[in-house]
Length: 388
Ligand SMILES: *Cc1c(COP(=O)(O)O)cnc(C)c1O
Image (cartoon, rainbow, N blue to C red):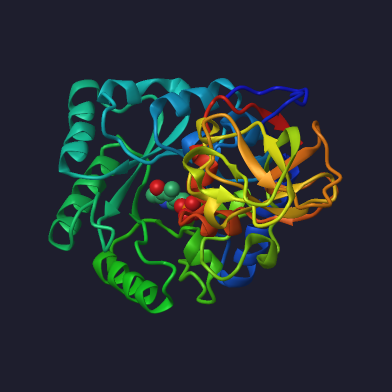
């Protein structure tokens, strides 16, 4: 993503509010303080997918209080180190990385997620060939659980963990922990079962645990935290969006960190019965004004958004409906017969209109059958990020 400083004259852009990310991090910390009566819980702030589309470099300074950052590529680890992140980094998969690459001291305290026996064997080879690495490696064994796509199953888990303990004894890794990623955290009963299963599999094995995702943290059930040695992982909430249906981030006390804007490029008056857009999908029921906005699916807006979605026009954020299909570079809005808006006026596709009115990204996502995380990460590099 490109970072720009000036608002484009025609649009579109995504305004990134770092202070909202800091606020949301503090919100999370506060919430966990209430839940973890037994001792502090550490937080991995998940910044994969370019910090959920917010720009990794833009976001890092807002997460200075996080205990560590979680990413999915070694490239992101190196970038964070180059940009000055000194605390731990969690690499969410070890696949595709050569064992020798983990030896670089510049990686600092690096936590690796071990997804399968092949990745475990890679760490073992590292120690046989080179002795203890000069980076500070920690390893987390992933339990596959209900998600079932990565990680070890119940039978494999304990023997694999014992191999990690042997690596710890030899000084190859500093610590070995247990990691679980929930599949059904939106449903309290299913979540309870997932947690029970993980607790049973880990049993009395030593080592820290890492659980949690945003959906688990949105619900009523507190996360079962192992005092003093729990690392909680959280992504979406940090960006101000709720991860469960029926409640928005704003209602939870979070602040939206991304607002997507563009501008009206033209306002046209049309007569009742006239159509707008490809495929004849919108036909005016009465005389009205059509506002065309410079943003479309090539910037990452879902094409289906026009059917049930809304956008906010102007500084005060008047909510209006779409008129016809979203095109590659533009879309049209039904501004109504008495519209006073004109070319150049700001349109807000989600987030906060200049005057403060908010269209929650979760509402937009629900109106086109997707989730906030997909909207955030679906934005293309054609949309510059601008600090709010
Ligand atoms: C993406 C991811 C998270 C963060 O999930 P959110 O629902 O965005 O909080 C946590 N853990 C793992 C392993 C992930 O891949």
